[in-house]
Length: 133
Length: 100
Image (cartoon, rainbow over the protein chains, first blue to last red):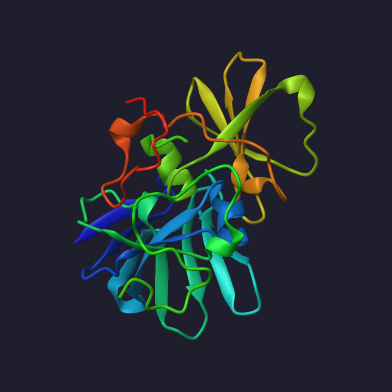
């Protein structure tokens, strides 16, 4: 069992492995919400249990996607592509050592001008879902 | 670039910021402030949750998220800080100085 939470604790969750590898997303929306770029794993809906959700707020970020954050502390926690029955979960929110590895940097076409990525991982202009496979 | 556990929780990854004097920034719209400790407060958008600001108590400066900047910032990363608290799922390999 993998546990995670927001900064203030008003949103907490449990994840049942396996967890998808982490993708680091440099799209404009992820850059805005995170403050830099957003790194996330993904699990089927059935593998995530919210153990505390009184702080959870949702923002409809596009016609088919929404972002979950904590209204108490502002932590960026979830991204949900509607109809895919999965939850994309911020790697930074996870407390348990989960042996996750970053698989690729995606939406690099939108990346900021103030940093370079030099970790040797695949860098993709967009994201089709199989980057670095 | 801050890798402390608080910035990791709030950003979801790493938080990148630059700093200005209070007199050199103008903030419009509501900001939700959260004090994780008594020494600093963190500002986010109450509507979408974007992590925007960090302000140390008693300081006359404010840090703002570089991800929030529209268009080119013209800035460069100066250092990685609190790397002792970094996540296990990434490596830092950009050659920028690191402070534990």
